[in-house]
Length: 101
Length: 101
Length: 101
Length: 101
Image 1 (cartoon, rainbow over the protein chains, first blue to last red):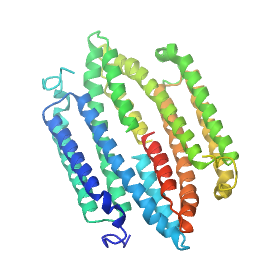
Image 2: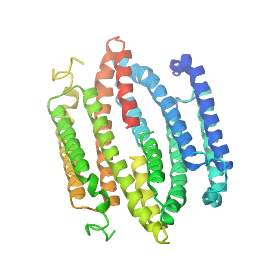
Image 3: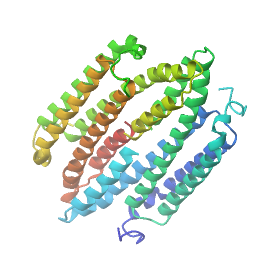
């Protein structure tokens, strides 16, 4: 993962970057909302509903990132006669972590 | 759910309230970390790992809340010869939302 | 878990037992269907759709069992002045396994 | 998805086909085991444990299929200067269904 932070191969999500950052700000607000609900002794079931919503929003961000990753990094690895096996394995492991979380 | 905010029936998680609030602060920090990673063009797979960690932490908070809810609200509803059916149904629906999120 | 197989405390799901058994038969058929699809070299994405359907059906059975369990075993433990803590802890651990699977 | 059943583009999982079929047989047995447990009035929590195991096994099969699909169908679509966008979108939708199930 030495590629991190080069900012080069990641142009692929540049277009959606602004939208992604907006969604993450909203999720941060949702988690802060859960914090406030616990502080205010809100009824437990309502807090659980809000946690489910934040979880789903986080997973939607993950799915969006994954789509960009498959379409760029994985596809690029396959493009010029390359072997995408390592990239596919890495992506699959990330998917398995998402499915289990 | 008119019970919200009465602050009365919720004494049950008072003891763990401080710990819960601390965990939620940390999750807020994790989401802010994901925001920063996207801003810095961090490698996609690393961002996904961080999102999985935040999702799991949120679900652990939900499980903790649920344990308190079952042990107090649901048990209380059953206690004095009462019928816990409505509380059980409500809790089960919250669990179903968690399982699916 | 020495209680298993006494057939006594489980009357609670007797009413729904027939329906549950029917749903499990259908899920068995779905898994057999996935087996056949793999054998026939069905397009991978279609197999994944069928696996998602079987998974969801299994989780719906689990949620139904859990609702019965909370409404009977857990509520019973609370009823006559008893302490439901052990039953609640056991149920919560089962829920955590479901959420993570 | 008219490609289904041509048996042509699916050579990719031929090697693992036998292993996959064996795993699916075992999952079928696990579901049959859950059926038997309900029939025998097994303690609810034990049934839930078995359902979690079957669910996890199904998801492991899905992850295995997905790895093959990404490494072959998606990579192939990218290979000879092709545009993998449609294949990536289709795979991402399947992943989203898995994450939510």
